[in-house]
Length: 389
Image 1: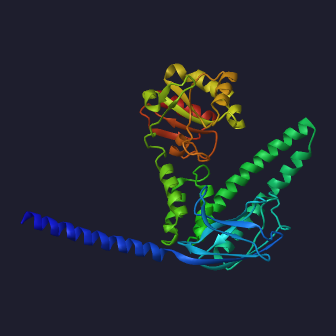
Image 2 (image 1 turned 60 degrees about the vertical axis):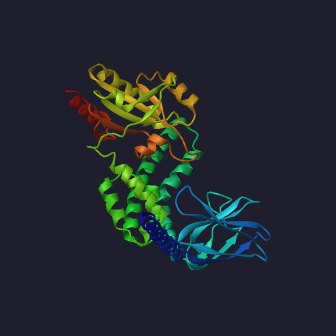
Image 3 (image 1 turned 30 degrees about the vertical axis):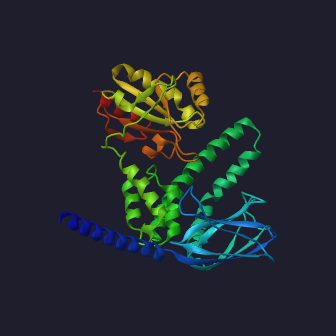
């Protein structure tokens, strides 16, 4: 009797599992929709051509391989959602990027029409893609925001007089900071306005930071996306980044990590508990980081005997450059080097702490609780004095 009941249970489970699997399979099949890409390519006849899909930043999936015949080419396939695509010509290293969607999209390429900045990047003319229209609208505004910066940067290249060059460098630096602030703000506003656009969500990936605006505002932008867009990989990756940012806001416990110091020994953040700690995310190649070392030394020497510590976390991929910089600048505080477990991806601890700019500082109290981020000068010193009382 027991064996019969057991058999029946197993049979029921098998039937249920099969039904669920078929439903899952059916839903995935239904999620994939046909697309057709029709193209013209002047100056690239008989060239091999590869179509890549880019579902999120730093990823790509091959959607097909074809060739240009009589200046024409075509691709057919299935995609779940609209996505950024790239046509790549291996023999010449030329490429073009644009948005494809379920349905038919047409694109015209011409080797005579290339990007102002990159000679290998072809400028496509796209028809039949509403996401491309959104994408073009965003970059038209971005170009207008960067126009003055680009003009002054060009002037800088032609200046030879040292004093004039220094003044121009300072001007360009101020304009770059202004542009970054304005473009970041515009990016968030654009994403909120185009909440049903996959392109707007993809573009937002470039501005997933809380350096210029409060993270709560970014959270509202993310929550505002339509349910359709929330199914995309871009949205899911952006959400991961948002959650990382929320986990390192003031009042949260600083995430634990262990990394190698210059002697190759493990150093854990938790080993500094009981001290007021300034986490300094920096790199030897970061000019502002190295420029801030003298003022950091003053801060460190003034408070190190009172229970204050600085822990530098280097974003260097070259260990020798990191050690050399520490030695040349006689950096007295503790230092560790970050890890890069995935090539061409952000470093491990920087990812954990959602670091997007160098230098970035995070101040912790004696219990390892985050107190503030990116304080400078007197404001930072006053907060350290307050925590050391």
